Image (tube, rainbow, N blue to C red; front, top):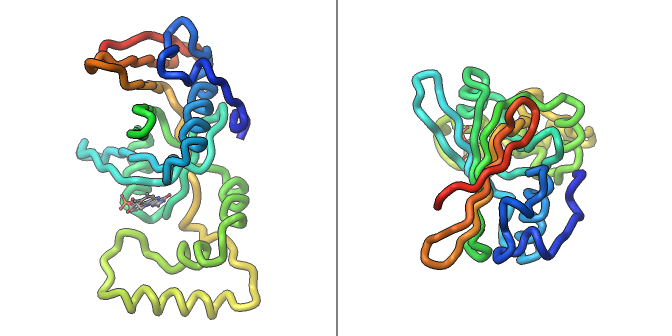
Amino acid sequence: MKYKTQISSSTSNKDNFDEGQVSADPLELFALWINDAHQAEIPEHNAIALSTVDTGGKPHVRMVLLKKFDSEGFVFFTNYNSPKAKQLSENPKAAFVLFWSLLEKQIRVEGSIQILSANASDEYFDSRPEGSKIGAWASPQSQPIPNRQYLENLKSDFEEAFQDKPIKRPDFWGGYLLKPDKIEFWQGQPDRLHNRIEYSLVEGEWRIQRLAP
Ligand SMILES: Cc1cc2nc3c(=O)[nH]c(=O)nc-3n(C[C@H](O)[C@H](O)[C@H](O)COP(=O)(O)O)c2cc1C
């Protein structure tokens, strides 16, 4: 993760958040803010509300965990047979929002979606705890199941199937890359006169503008 360790006390400071001072690269600012949330020990600070739209134009939203970001975009992992995966294959656009109440910060991201390379998905899957790997195999995500026991049985079946064998990534499970074309940073201020700085990708360049709250 290219930007992971950068820390600055000025650009992420809420009293000093100005369109003339922010980084030209929104991913750098994203890294600063994520780092602030991490330092503040906000639980699940990488949980994002991910929105997708089906072919009928109906929006759908659910939480997923943001697992990586760099100059390419934002990465999350899921089941490729899930409703969100169907929506993303039919309409490869997505948006997400995250909000940290303690820091009075919101970030909104919009962009297009690509399937992550099999190698990158393998790499992440291999880094997961064994229980999560089995969980990925065992869960027909978002399909109705008769009861809890059904799931436990599937789990046991896969534990048995993979006994003494490496648990490889199921081909129905992997990552997506959201390539951003708009990123907005929102910082709470008194009297609801909040600071909003929006980055839009125009002909390959990030344009920065301030929005009214
Ligand atoms: C905090 C949180 C994090 C979650 N992270 C993921 C995730 O990284 N990947 C995932 O597939 N589902 C995750 N889920 C479950 C999803 O919200 C959702 O129930 C599931 O992906 C099915 O969504 P779908 O039916 O729209 O495809 C998470 C739920 C919560 C509450």
